[in-house]
Length: 334
Image (cartoon, rainbow, N blue to C red; front, side, top):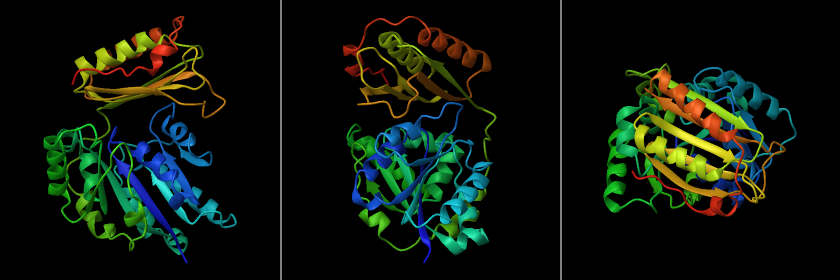
């Protein structure tokens, strides 16, 4: 009997990690092998997942359409040799992944086919930014095209008009997929994980066709600091950058070491929106350094370097005591 594989994909900032964390708190993924693929020199998503589950398999080779395929095949074949400890594989892709190659690999690789089968492709669709994201980014379109199930996220923070627009944009690309709504990342996974295997292989040719912007426009950088940071200064930087450069700012995600906090403070932004910060109850690993990852598309190289330099200056400057302020939401105007 083969082991089912579920792929969770979705564009940067669509809420994949939040969905996964809530799913891991339930019984259905208690014995799942969890694989997280990340883009960037300083992986962060797997640390947010490790807050819930320690045994997360990280594949940090970057784009899922490149070297990650070989890494995934090697990892799955290696895991199959271990005495059965898992009854499902759950893969979270990077937000810039075109999932077509990984789906093709899982469906057509002869060795994997003896051990695993693709059960479902689940795509998170940002309820706040769906029309804009799907209009601009080919990766986001392919993520929706390949989905068996579409999950509209952030329904708790968007109005009915935005929700209807997100539904329409997703439905226009993939009218056959089932559609679910997630509020604060909470989703009933039973109808997704208890149904018949994926039919996504029939849509591979459709997703593989069409123009691609390529990854040359995408630029990312990470900044790290080994000391406590001035939370207010970083929050102000993030708010200003998001407000003035949101059109080319795909994603910001970071863990900040702040005085008087037992764990890191999580900061996140997507385009023009800075999401409320929150402290994790403990550090997910022995590494207690502050680190922030920034991903841009279409931003001039000089500006990217300017942002990197300014952020580095903030993170590596002496910090004030700001423990209490780290618990206050910091938001930018959208």
